[in-house]
Amino acid sequence: MAALRSLLSRTLTRAVLQPRSVLSLPKVPSNGFAALRNKATIAATTQTSNSIIQSQAAIGYWLLGCSGLIIGAVVLGGVTRLTESGLSMTKWHPIKGIKPPTSAAEWEEEFAHYKQFPEYKYSNGMTLETFQQIWYMEYAHRMWGRLIGVAFVLPAAYFVLRKRVQSQFKPMLLGIGSLIGFQGALGWLMVKSGMDHDPEGKHVPRVSQYRLAAHLGSAFVLFVLTFHTALRHLLPEQTLKGDLAQLKTLRKFAHGTAGFIFITAMSGAFVAGLDAGLVYNEFPQMGDRWIPEDLMVLEPAWKNVFENPTMAQFDHRVLGTTTGLLVGGLWAYSRKFQLHSRAKLAVNAMLGMVGVQIALGISTLLYFVPTPLAATHQAGSITLLSFATWFMYELRKLPK
Image (cartoon, rainbow, N blue to C red):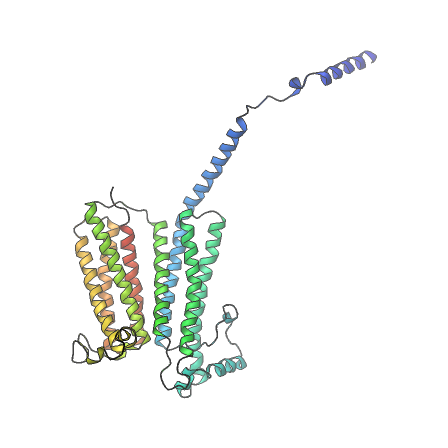
């Protein structure tokens, strides 16, 4: 035992006194840690890139769904305007306004507040039941707007926080979200303009046609941005074939036509705001004349474009006819090119839709603006703009 203890003591003493190099782990080259870090970074970047690629379709379908909701809001807003329901809700609370009146006392309080404004004074004794009908129409429009906000903001936050959004699209998503908020505030400013008008109730209360056009115009811009961004996520760009200079001309033609579609829709907002669809219900003439006598009755002259119902309807007729001719010309010019199948489908859809839209517009006029026809006509305008946006997207990638 004494010999064993002596052997163990000598072994431990040698182990403790040995140089550090004998007991150390094998050395890693000085650049090895950097290489390991680079590999880890590359792996993480690759994983993030794969996640972004895999999320593109999901983001595209989400934005496409938001585009559909915006179309719904435009149509519902048109119905609200046509049924004269827009001034029924006299207060705007983004959060509190979510809850509708539920008891008889709450409805009486809401109705009493409505009676203080010009629309009730003009109605000559509206009943509570009638008030509830128009109130719910405006309520549906406002709730639809809130739905758009929630449907956009929550998924956008998820995709951004999960790093699924390409950096080039982040400013666009921020712009769309800001425009949604702006649209809600602009809608209330539009409604408020109808409450301040003619407090004595001597004339028909209506919202400012300027604010109505701004509200509709911002909705159309919001739709185009959302829909175009959705297409960029869902449809791979295809290179066009043909002469570069002629293709650039085709692209300019398409953009100009889309601009005319937008301007025509905005002129329709002035027709709606001034009830100009009810002044001349003949086509193609206005009354028994091609150019009515009361076209330029306001001073200064520029006011006729925006405040004279006759001029508003005349402008809309001219712009609608011009837009129809432009779409037909664009379709004919596009036949010179060997466009890919998606581009052909888009321009063919434009041609078909502009014919439907012109027929809807004429019918709406001849039948004294019935709500179903007029609402369908407004839906037709944004549908035509969607086809134009699609066609412009298909013309993005020119040959080098």
